Length: 145
Length: 145
Image 1 (cartoon, rainbow over the protein chains, first blue to last red):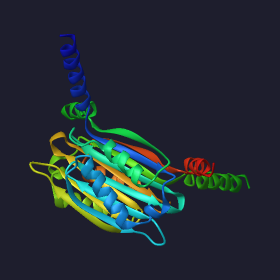
Image 2 (image 1 turned 60 degrees about the vertical axis):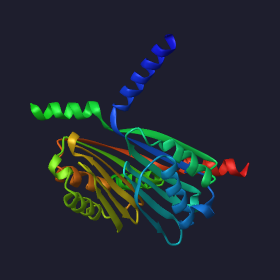
Image 3 (image 1 turned 120 degrees about the horizontal axis):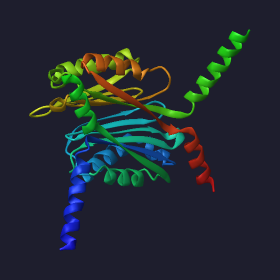
Image 4 (image 1 turned 90 degrees about the horizontal axis):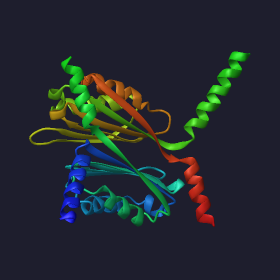
């Protein structure tokens, strides 16, 4: 009974947390990565598409661009928003971000996969709440005055 | 003389600040916008392309998607990284982000233009430093150990 009660409270808290914002935006900072992979357009494309799929996202389109003399930009547009990466092989660095909505997609699966595939020795991520419900309600209140 | 000295120091500080990271990532939170515009794919496309141009970015490609029953996602891939938007007309909200590098592009021009065009009554932005030079140097130090 206590276990059931605990689970019920936990699910309620999870539900409340999920309703705090319309979207979640994860910022991935990827340092000390393999510069050869960072400069390989086909490898980046494969990694980004696989990362999106593994995280549970529905892919709509993708666009990748190779810069001269080096660097790759890649954006995967998903039904849940986007997954993007920009690489600086000369600095062994890549900056990625994963904007998602709903609860079906897990951006941290993409984070773990990308940093492993890019052979990053040092990384961190930040989660931003996007479209905060309290701000939406506050804004709606302002309008009705 | 004092004025010249002050300007010189100010420019030096500006230069140092610009070198603190490889990129800047602006997060635009746009509340209480016009829901009809938020749901209009062609309008969003025009606004995003114009915003990118006005800010000084070089456009490489763009992709827009209209969701059913409502909402638009749009990504403009630029030579300096990306400008993206995701709209929730049912909540009068749009979340946009502008990832840029270098000093030629001014994302705040895009911010002002987008919020004006979407007729947002309430908005805010956050600037994130991406690819911090001190982290890159720290990571490089870790590698050489």
